[in-house]
Image 1: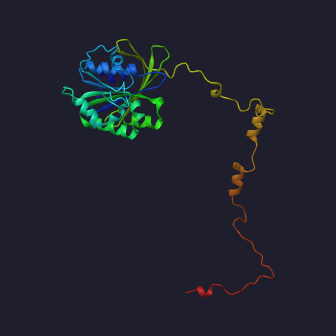
Image 2 (image 1 turned 180 degrees about the vertical axis):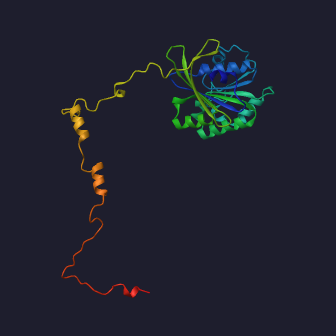
Length: 295
């Protein structure tokens, strides 16, 4: 799935690369920029994390269609020397900067990184701008790098819920390998998830090697082993064969055997009769007590 995303995303797509301090997603972001330039797309990078020289380092394709909007030198606009600041992150400003170029087709917008913006702009405002960019038409796709360990889980969840694809990267077993957990949402609402092991070469090409084996050699932990509840007791809970046989032959008082059922259900002499001998003190009227009911 990672290779498919590198080949191109649908129009109006929002791709979030989510990393942490344990593994940086900067090189993977550069791989997506390189792939977009190879497809002859115009790419606008709003750079906060790294400088323009560092971002272009390793790009093998032509950078003529790469437009870097420098927010690295002065991200908060304190010296008024920055081409772009955190507080200018709105759809009008972004669209104006993109349309200044002479490319007729919608461009790919890269935000490096969203964490800089989320630290100074409210998450609802950031999500609103991303949603407007998705619907505006001036931008073909949005690719953003997000440092997940810098924000609360609710902020990360809101941004990732808005995205059409989320790639969460983590270090792999080997030094040159990394793990990618990919979540992709189609236009129909179907959600597809996958995990892949990949590596990035010096030319920023991505090689997907295999999928992680979760059903491999898993050792059973001591607490997962089946325990015998009757072990280590001071008394015996087990029955011998003779005791078990005697238990099975024992007739319980509340269990009706076949013979007992037959004896209870079989009618004998005098069954079904009620015998009553009146007492001397009984008040007995010889007349019919219900003669007034006769019609």
